[in-house]
Image (cartoon, rainbow, N blue to C red; front, side, top):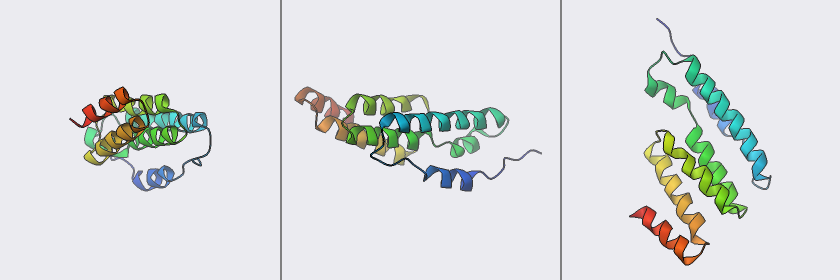
Length: 124
């Protein structure tokens, strides 16, 4: 019987190691792209395991939301929207779904009236 090593503690401490909020979004993007490659390697190496167990090791929703928040705070609303919209291809917890929706609405809050209406349609 094969078992998955306990990576939660390691990945949990890794999650807290983020770039500074004032650093360029391209630096954030490089770090998160590298992390996504690691998550993909974990998925590939443990493809024999229960998919729900492997999903708990992923941190893709947290990374996309963090990148979106940083891009929004730096005034890069298109980058924020792209990062948040990239979460459509993976399953996310309710907590992350709420954070994604919150970031989408807040990033549209400073936009034009039409964009604000689009943000309100997200809630409906």
